Structures are given as structure tokens and as C-alpha cells.
Image (cartoon, rainbow, N blue to C red):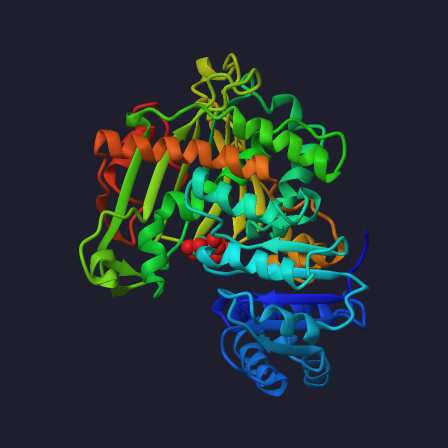
Length: 481
Ligand code: BG6
């Protein structure tokens, strides 16, 4: 069954993700009339709660997390009226019949959003199946973490695949819901000027940075067992890399786009031991305030990395010899997600004899917190040039925030929840992509273990350990900072 479904079921409905992102996103869709008036939203989690109590919890979360200009009391109430709740212990099969009873008639289609601890995936799928909540008119969205290596993600994917065919499985990577990430495709494929140069003839290297200023944020057990490589590189950063490096899909059809991304992911070269750096934040200062080290935040010493830098290569014709430098970390100097494309120099400098020095063009696609595309181009400084020609780098700026100032800024989950309800899988990750991502990541982790590569301390508020600078500097490259 295609098209918009009339029932949405949220697992983990009292958790942090639901409070911070899912409920505010659903409210925004409701407020803007983007979901059908008869869409019913059910929450489920362990705690016993009546519908009214869940609505009160949702109201509190919305008041806390919605921006002031998005709160409208009358719409808030009509949104809360859509919500109902059923308590469920997903580890046993017993409660699922009561859940199905509560949902009632799902002939208008059921979309499930499953965000749960990894050990609950299998029992939840079994419970849904036993209660006939897996039929042809049911699709399922899966939030990470979906396992922590290829093998364990395979177990989860097999369990889901035993009752849902791939076209009804929607794996979430919230970066794909970000407007600026989708804009990458528009930039590359809706403009003539970039694509002819978008290859090893025109590009020297690519840098992808996702830096955060936050630290552990109370996610003790999860984060320490996961680390930056699996928390950020395995999913978000590899998706950014795939969108940057893929060939042009024939159209925006989900198969065409995902076919092109997976080719990139499969062609990632194994990373050599000297092409990666692990780090862990020590104490330091962020925005003038002193912050504790990871070990202090965590409560004991640990070798988990909160920073990783990698020199990656895509082994195909287009990208031969073009490094992709990736880095991500917590407690860094700035919160910033960006892709920087460093073009090659022009083949011959006609200004050289008159003293004119040239820098190669650089295109920076800033995804957050600001949203812009900036091209550094060379221009001549105004003057009579009696003392020689002075050339200077000037930015050609496209601020997306300004150019589209009237457009509503949206949380990534708004787009993803709407696509889940409407059944469009283009911005979700297919199983073969996830597996290609894990294969590459597992190999890196095996190298870390084999070569005993330890996490090096870096000061909070810095750009990571010294090794990260050395990783690019020895190629004559500086990080875009
Ligand atoms: C999540 C990670 O997937 O992405 C977090 O688990 C991280 O550790 C977050 O903070 C970053 O997302 P965003 O949208 O704030 O860049």
C-alpha cells in the first residue's frame, strides 16, 4: 500500500529523542497542516500512563523544546488531542495484543517509529508480528544504534527482514533530514558549473568536518561503548561523503539515489594505520567556561575516542588520488558541520612575473550552525599596479538563511517523520549502504586493535590532538579553520 498512512506509533515515546525532537517535529507538521487531520499518534514505552498523562508529558516537552514563535495554544491543544498512549514491556510478547487493541483499526496504514535499546529490537519485532502489526499496510522506521558492528547490525536487520520487506523498512540517519544536506544534491546537480570540475582533474582534496562543543551529556553507558567512530563516522559522515562523491543519479527516485551512494561506500579503500587519529578530550575551556575531561565526565579512565580524523580514499576513476579528510569530535573549538572542496590551482600563473600570487579556489558548504555556500575566488586588488599586481582571495557568498529567509527552518525529524508517514524512502538508508558502512568501520577498528592505536588527549576547546594536524600537514594541506 502506497501513500499517507493514518496511524503513527512511536516506541520510546517517553524518551529523550521523543521529547526533544519527535514530539516537537510532529507538532510542527500538525501546526503547518502537513499531516492529515485524521492522523492518530500513539506512544508506547514501559511506564504505566493514561492518555491524559501522556498528553501532559508531551505538553511539557513541547513547552520546553519548541521555539517561542512556534507555540500556539489552540494548535497545541488540538495536537495533544491526537495523542494516545499504551504502556508496553517490549521484552515479552504479552503486552502486544493490548497494544494492537489500543491501536484499533489500522486499515488506513500504520507507520511505526522504533527507537529502542538494541537488545529490544528482536523481541519488539516478534511481538509486533504476533499481534498482526506487520502486515502489508505497516512500515517501520528504525532509529540508530542498529548494532555496533557488521555482525550485530546483521542480526537486527535479519530480525526486521524476517517480517518486513526492505521497501517497508526506513532506516533513519537524521543528517539526511537536514535541509542543507539535501541541498548538496541541488548544488551539485542543479548547476552546470561545478560538476565538470567535480573529479580528480579539478579537485585536490575534500575535507568533511563535524565538530561539536558538547561533551558526554549524560550518555554514559551508550557513548563509552560506542565512541566517535561508530557514533558519527559510521553513519552521518559517511552519508555526507557518499553524497559528495556519488555519480549523478538519473532522478530522485529512492533506488537511483541509493544505488549511487552505495557504489561510493563499497569503493572506500581500507584505511592504513598512519591515516587515522584517535583522540579523547581532556579538560579545557569552551566559550570561556572551564569543562572537565572525558575521564572525569565518565567517572573513570577509558580509551573510548571522542575524536577521530581519517584520510579516506574512494577507489574509482573519478576520485583517483583525491583524499577525503574526515574529522569529528566532541568538546571542540566550535560547533560546525561543513564540507570543504579544495580545487586545484590553475595550470599556469600569468600574473607571476608581476608578483601576483594565486591561491586555489575553495568551496565551503556550511551545513550548520550557519547555512551557506561560499566560493573563494581570486580577484585583483584595485589600483594602478605600478608596484606589481596584487591578487586577493574574496568570497562569493550564498547565504541560504538569507536567500530563503521566508522559509520555515525545520528540524531534520520533521522531514523524516513526514516521509515515513507518506512512504517515501529516498532519505532513508538501505541495508546494503549500512553494511558497506560497517565493513569499512569494522576494518578500522580491527586496525586500531591490532596496531594498539590509543586515543590521544586533546584539550577541550581545541581542534583535536596534534596528530590530526600532522595527518593533513604532511600532505601540505591545512584544515579549514
Ligand atoms: C547523533 C549522535 O547521532 O548526532 C550524537 O549520537 C551527536 O552524539 C548528534 O551529538 C549530532 O547531531 P546534530 O544534528 O546536532 O549535528
